[in-house]
Length: 117
Image: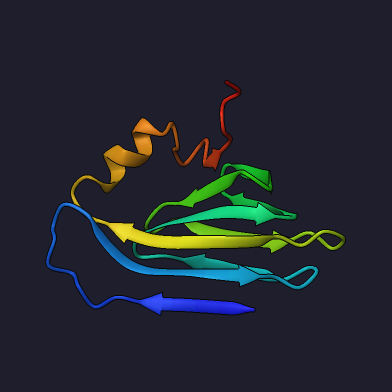
């Protein structure tokens, strides 16, 4: 299952949502290598996979997410046994970088993992 919704509203210079969607990947599904023009955040609902960038391979599982920065070459692959189901959103704008920095996401550390309470 693949759903993508594209928005044509790019009039807010502070933060724009360009696209969002959902994908329930097949075993071993792969995207990339590719370069994105905007920030792209994936949140994994179930399953597992691996995100690859110039900074390494990052395993990501249910309840976690990963951030792709603009102009960064990346690849991501669903696990062969337990493929991921994720939702994603593509954003950009003057405050986008700051929002992700406040979430402690960077090119070197692109994986979101919730902190225990």
